[in-house]
Image 1 (cartoon, one colour):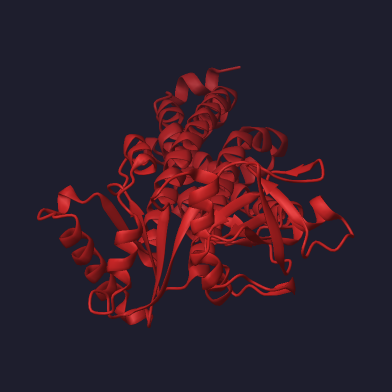
Image 2: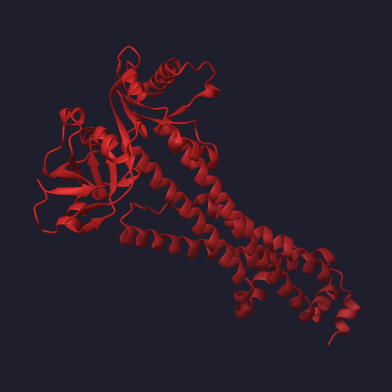
Length: 414
């Protein structure tokens, strides 16, 4: 019997039982839809994070204290490390040590809120150079000015704030020249950033930037930096600059073996690769978990196919009496199972794509994130392949049972 005849027979048989066929493939549709949404979310998250990392520019290098984190304990150790201080900054600032560096700025993370006349706002407080940020993150001022190197040297209590901070603390009142309080220390507002939103790892509108020396002296009470951000003359020399930074710090810390480094240097491409690897692994894990639902759907397909075999016993006997072989009967029912799950896979891909697209619009609208919808071709191909595979695996037993039926006994079946 030609396969085209087997296919047409299977197709018309399934079409004559529309309701049963639809309910049978429901589990497959749900499973494939979930796979599509997980993979689309993974691609969207990867695109968002790598885009944010790229906001610093491919020519940017970040130096952080502690060993490069490989696990939760390493992250804790890095947070407690104090290996990056003023002497490291001075050594890296020497042109003979790092000739490709154009500019650099230490960064201090400060916890706590900001207040003004009884109003409190939990802002992101950084000890940093606002000039460095404006040049490298494309920020502009809505009003006022930014503090300069003389304010850093004198540890001046001045601050540049984001638009959301200004709105929450001052409302319609002019904020320039007013004093805000951070950890019982008063800071004079000298500038306000233009509304910008999310850039890299923080929201510019929620920022309060003070001189890093002031942050160390009055807010954290530490003599080390959270990190140092260095900009190279071009993206092409980043790897060479990273090598010079490591060599300079190892000489300064008397380190001969790279495994003993008490610091780690990250390029933007390295961060992008790390994020892509982590998100890829997480997406694969979630996809594996979701695939379990396909097994449940496959069991449902097998159950319905077994019922169908019982109901169509006389049909099987009649076809065998007319010359159909065991192989023909087996292919008939196996084709029906594959058609069911394959169609379920295609429907799941379509529904998953539509829901993922709608979700991306909702995320952009309600969170303000630049979340983009990227059709996951890999997820679509994997979904269709898995759905067909489920049909083959779970349709094999019912098809085998149908092919074993005796034509004489089958014709006697009522």
